[in-house]
View 1 (spheres, protein in one colour):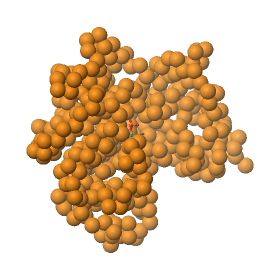
View 2 (spheres, helix red, strand yellow):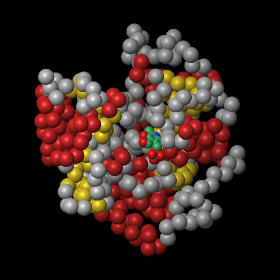
View 3 (cartoon, helix red, strand yellow):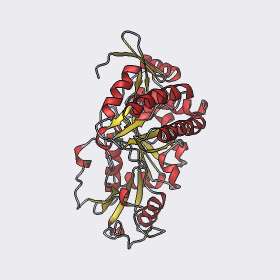
View 4 (spheres, protein in one colour):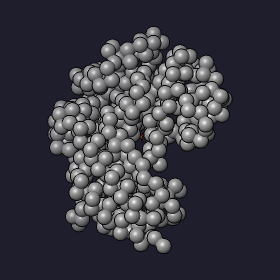
Length: 379
Ligand SMILES: Cc1ncc(COP(=O)(O)O)c(C=O)c1O
């Protein structure tokens, strides 16, 4: 799949010859407002003309403004925020902060959680430090409510858990943890004095139709890691923490330094991204357009026998095929026709995470092309 993309405009990419490709992955789930959003672009170029980078001991109003903007979203009075570069770094720091508060306890997460690209978090995680739950096994039990007797949960000693590191979606395969399981884990971890870290790197900022993925679960995290959409393609991430957590961290005199922490350019970019989300009511759009997309995918399932499953939340959607080795063939043909779609070949999954600005027209035309390819695979 060799391409020579030279320009991005909203949901469109253009190659050097001017061929248009509709981006159904928003980069790699980053450009939620579309490529090269005019307001974000302007804020970036204005900031470049002023100052890009700063020593971590010096502060800038733009970092303060972004912190206020974000803390308001989480209703964190007296909370604190720090701005970094990648989602991986934000998740790593969030976990480090929770370990600082309770160094001798374990962390709990879902077995398939991505967490970050840093190898210290990749699977297998050490049993001394982590307890894991495979939520894909959930639902196969006869219990109406989660209980400690459940074989998925009976190995977990909640008094040993300091933190539930919660990923509101298994983003690659587009699978979502069951509501009752998440609520149970939250309740048990809190009952034992633990905290909740939400990894919103992928689900954050409207991807699932709500501001944050955890909003679907009616829980309130203590620390949130953000990335991807926060910079709309520019590498800026954030760790946001509640007032009580910030107070505990301060008591421990913790120092974290990296070169591009709170850089004015990243902060100006993220601040304008948040302003655009609010001013242009992006979330009000994401829900109906996500529902429209889902309806079209369900129609594909109804009419194409190779579609085994359709699932999604907001504009994080997928279809799963009941045949193997077809997703890459489909993705290549789709690219030739001008549609860039995501795939997870080992699970026969085709994935769609377009910008929240995608139009119904472009969804319809993509589904039409996809249907014609899926029909060729039938029989
Ligand atoms: C759930 C989740 N967390 C963290 C990350 C890491 O983000 P980054 O690639 O910006 O380091 C990713 C990346 O895809 C992710 O999907």
